[in-house]
Structure formats: C-alpha cells, structure tokens
Image (cartoon, rainbow, N blue to C red; front, side):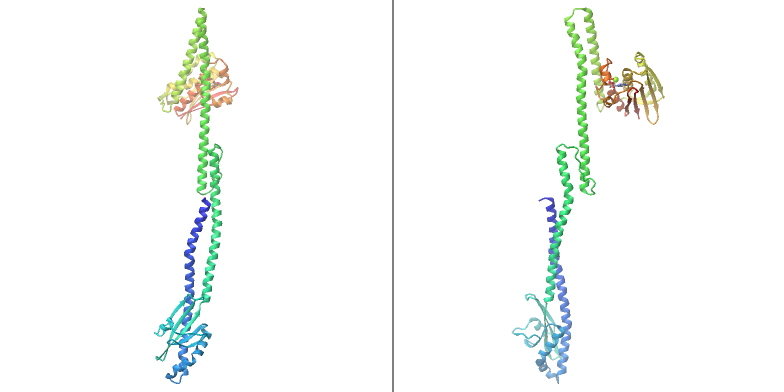
Length: 470
Ligand SMILES: Nc1ncnc2c1ncn2[C@@H]1O[C@H](COP(=O)(O)OP(=O)(O)OP(=O)(O)O)[C@@H](O)[C@H]1O
Ligand SMILES: [Mg+2]
C-alpha cells in the first residue's frame, strides 16, 4: 500500500468512525426533541379537552345523576367536535367500553389499552407504537366529573410528520457523509500529492546521486516543512561528498605527479652513476678513472641530499611533529642568513637589500632559517634579478617579504609551486640544481609555526614571497 492510499484510507476511516457515532446520536436527539414537542402540545390540548367534556356534561345534565347518560349519548359528538381543534383521533372510554370515536372506523375493544387503563387510576399516560408505520402516539387522560364519574379521554396521534423529519435527517446525514467522503478522498489525494511530489524528487535524485551523478541536487529545499529540511540536509550532504571526492581525486593526482617526478629525479643521477661505473670497468686511463670517480661521488652526494630533503619533508608532514620554539631576534636571524648567502648572490651579481625592523618572536630558529634560505636560494638561482629586497616589519602581524625583480613565475607553475618535486620549466631545462622540494619544505615549516606563505609574481616583473606570522 503506497503512502497516498494509506493517507486516504486513514482519513476515510476517521470520517466513518465520526459519522457512525455522530449520525445516529444526532438523529436520535432531534427525533426525541420532536416527539417531546408533540407530546407537550397534545397534553396541553388534552387538559383543555377534559375540562370541556366535564363542563359540557354538567351543563347539559339536569342533575348530577344524568351525567352518565349525557356522556353516553353525546360522546360521538364530543369526540368529533374536539377533533376539529386538536387535529387527531379522539376516543372516550368508560372502562373498556368505547363511548365515542372521532373516526368512523370499526373498533373492537376486547382488551383495554394500557394507557387507558392507567388513566382510570387517575394518571395521564402515553406510549409510542414504533412498529406501526407511521409511528403512533397514544395518550390517555382521566376525566372525573363531580368526583363521581370516571371516564378516559384517549388521543391517537399520527406521527407521520415526525417520521418524515426523521427520515429527512437520516437522508441529509447520508448525503452529507457521501459528500464528505468524496471531499476527503479528493483532499487526501491533493495533500498526498503535495507531500509525495518532493519525496519522489528526492528519491529520484538520491538514486542518480548514488549512481555517481554527483552534480544532482534536490530542488525542494525552500519548502517550509520537514521535506524542505530533509532536502536542505541532503543537498548539504551532497555538497560535502562532492567536495570530499574532489579532494580525494586531487590528492590522487598529486600523489601520481609526486611519484612521476620522484622517479624522474632519481633516474638522472642513477643513470650517470651507472654510466661512470661502466666506464671504470673498461678504462685503464687514470685521468678518466679519476673523473669517473669524481662524478660518481658528486651524483651520489646529490642523491643523498635529495633523500635527506625528502625525509625532512616527510618528517615535517607528520601531524604530531613539534617545532621547538624559543624567543628569537628575527632581524638578527635574517642578517645571519643573508651573510651566509652573500657569496652565492655575488656569483650571480645580485645585491641583497635589507630593510629590517627589530622584532622578537617565538620561532624554531634552525627551521625558520631554512625557510629563508630556500626562498632566497630560489630568487638567486632562478629569477635573473640584479637585486633582492628583504623587508621585515610588524603591523598587526609580522610580515617578511623577499622580493626580486627578475623573470617572474608563470601562472600554471605558480598554482602547483608548493607541491613536492614540482619545478618550473626554467629550472627543469637549465643546469641549475634543484629537486622542487624547497618551497614545499618552506610551507610546511611556516604552517607548523601557525603562519602563512604566499607568492605574488608577474612575468618579467619579478616575484615576491610573503611570510606572515601571527
Ligand atoms: N623567485 C623565483 N623566480 C622564478 N622562479 C622561481 C622562483 N622561486 C621559485 N621558482 C620556481 O619554482 C620552482 C619550485 O621551487 P622549489 O624551491 O620548490 O624547488 P627547486 O628550487 O626547483 O628545488 P629545491 O628547492 O628542492 O632545490 C622552481 O623550480 C622554479 O622554477
Ligand atoms: Mg628551491
């Protein structure tokens, strides 16, 4: 059973329960009210009629003893006279003997009727015969004349109007029930459609999403109900899944390029070493032997340096790696680094311009020196600049800028520059030594200090590396 049928069945069941209880109760109440109004009317008319019969017989009889004969002879007249005002069949009884009847119908009075019998005890009494169609109301009232003669005035009231009203009520209730049920079905369908449509949309989208179409989103997120809430949550979940998958893919790409670059880097020195080793086997020439040994050692050292750098990077990448911070005079630290790079810069005809504020900060001195060396080394090796400005200042944060005025860095190189083994075209083709690890190491160190490193560069205008510390 789907949701729509369940909702409709539930509503109709609720409606039917209500109608089954309410219908008979309301019909019964209104019928009872009707009957009691008729009875009241009949009783008040009956009272007037008993007085009339009493007065009539006393007036007509010459003396009190003639009353029975007056009643006996005039009962037919009295009943038909009273019928005109009371508008129902009227009978006068003496015991079980019928003295007069307003209706000219054969009446056999073998047994005295219960309400008539009761009236001879001095009480007025009534009962309703529901087996008759229409129902009939029987009322009998005692008539006592001069305290001596007892008669019973009986009224037989046809309840066809009350029956008609009761049937009308039942019909109205039945028609109303039918209309209400139809209305409920239509309303249930409309409401369930409104609820189901977004759920269907949600089901469809989740199906597509689970099959890998990650761009799918639910459109019902702006509804102000539970479905809207669910849609919003689904979209948020879809966003984060899509994002995570994007990150995973990106990581995978990075990993692939890391291995490609690593194997490429390691291959060149190994090929050189193997080449010279082969030469050593073949030659007896001491000069060639010396040269081969020299190159083998140099390449071996280069390999060792690369492995050391890689180990350093992997050590820094461990998330529980702790930096040993101590208060450091950053200005002095920079001056020392520039001193150590002085000769290398001079070889490239580069002037180092220092503009440093006196700043003390908590740093891991050795690691931070390495950051500055790596950045400066790049500017010296690659930029082809004639001067490098090194500026240290503190506004709300500490800012170190190392700026050259050389060739600049291409945008596509800039995007990946912090990835391990990533090198620009120039450094790949030229003879300048480098493994593409310097900036990755620098970024790890700066981030371990809670800082940020950023490179701003423009082709043929130069490059500025900014290190910002909190
Ligand atoms: N100031 C600069 N001007 C021009 N190119 C630069 C500059 N700084 C960095 N680059 C480019 O960025 C690349 C990555 O630099 P990075 O320091 O990470 O590696 P590397 O210098 O090639 O190797 P390593 O630092 O491990 O010896 C360099 O290969 C170079 O092409
Ligand atoms: Mg470098």
